[in-house]
Length: 436
Image 1 (cartoon, rainbow, N blue to C red):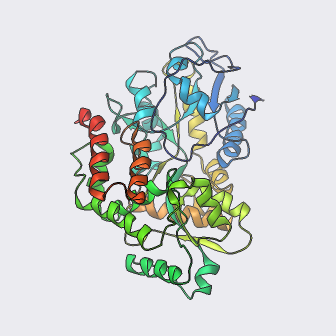
Image 2: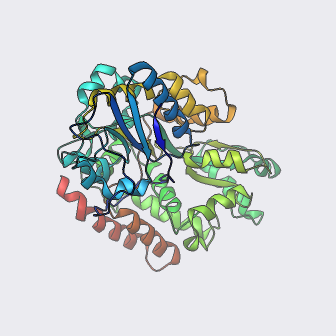
Image 3: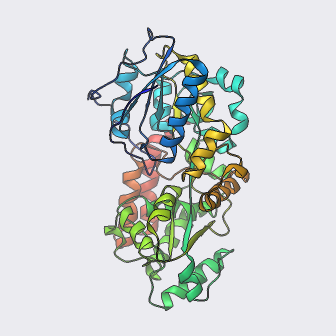
């Protein structure tokens, strides 16, 4: 049996911008894989909760792995912060595990790849056929070039779950107001106007944390194409910060506040406040991520609810989930690849799906939970259209804080849309220009 030490874990709700390279030591470290590791032992770290969809699925994968290989898994749960803040030091030492979960993106997995701390797993990807199981946008966060920019170059990780942003709605509130699910943007704003006319603030929002920035990016995406996403996220070409897409997003977001679609107090509200507003039935619409889905299933009991895609937009926020990565100093790389392959099997993918997660390679016929199937089908529809477009704060390590601060200025009326866009553009270019 695997020797398992349970510690508190922390799920990341948004992409982490900055990678702090601290000198903190991981508390209670298990003996790492290292280059002298036992060939019959796989040292594994991840930060998912024991009862989360991934935690449940991966525990089963450990059992299958041990039964099939005869090897032993030494698993120790780490917190997200433990892994994030000490990764560069730990992976450059004999304490490195053989396989671990790590955050995707340029400032995280990309940085470690560029430092030579992660193994190039391209040969294993070809051997096991993992690329055939992953939609193009899901592959983007798994590959990094020499500078650590995602989207091209060798494979450095494999995701086996995903995440995306959608529109949650209160079915009972819609029915009471005589409203249907909007299929066009004009119908969407008509729904918002109808709720405002009833004295209801329709959109649950937060300007103190990520939701408002994600709505801003979704508005930009509604006017954009894949090349815009590639320019913004992958630095393929300069981004026009006074161009149509970003100008539309900034000006429209301000209109949402002026028209009463969003609370004027939004700059003082956290993501939790927005989510609870929807859970309590105070706001009938919430544009946010699949990470809320399981909580809504557990906590909403006063009304029926569902979801629909943001109208008239072919692109949606979202990405793969975090990655399985294999440290360069792993002494059991082949065992690590066998474990990854098990997590991609239909039965393990179904466990993720039936417990509220978003598997990347599940057979929908294996999903027996009706609510989970609704979410998975919506996610699959986005992937079938190559619609996943990542998150607005990904381009620079400090862009999350800049976006939150600038949109607060916008809502408070202390900066015009053009001034906000100029400030964001300056922040973006201070980092992105070095990669062109």
